[in-house]
Image 1 (cartoon, rainbow, N blue to C red):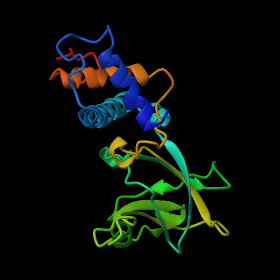
Image 2: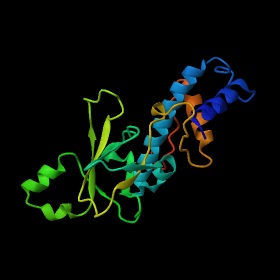
Image 3: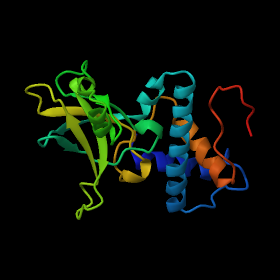
Image 4: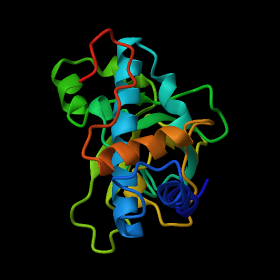
Length: 209
């Protein structure tokens, strides 16, 4: 589904007979888009919490897309900044483009120096990556890089599976939404328009607020 189609779906709902009377037909499309972006991030975060609670982050897969990227010496330029989640979970997986069974290990930005100080270089024998922001970018197209280490011989491209914030996408870009979750986005926007937090979808035995 494209971003504009999601916006039109929500707009149609707000104009229809099922829309709550206190918000029916009252909002400009730009306001709808902003709340769409906020609802998207809230749902992604709640999905991450679910994955954390059950130690299974595959629940995030449906919200992600794979991006094939060409390696430039020791890094790739991300087409979009990834969504911000704890432990850099906005990037779900990095693999050689021709070998999806050999994932890279995620390292914190300062991990190379820490391992060197511990004389634990053997830990770094596997392909690894870390995210580096580039605030000096003048074109706004080189803002986020994945720095790569211990690249397998002959690998020139990687596949990066990541979740992209909705605000980074143009209206005609495809939005990664798991099948059947479109209604969750609609309801998330409705709740935000009514001044309520997005519904808690995490089954953690904690009462909803």
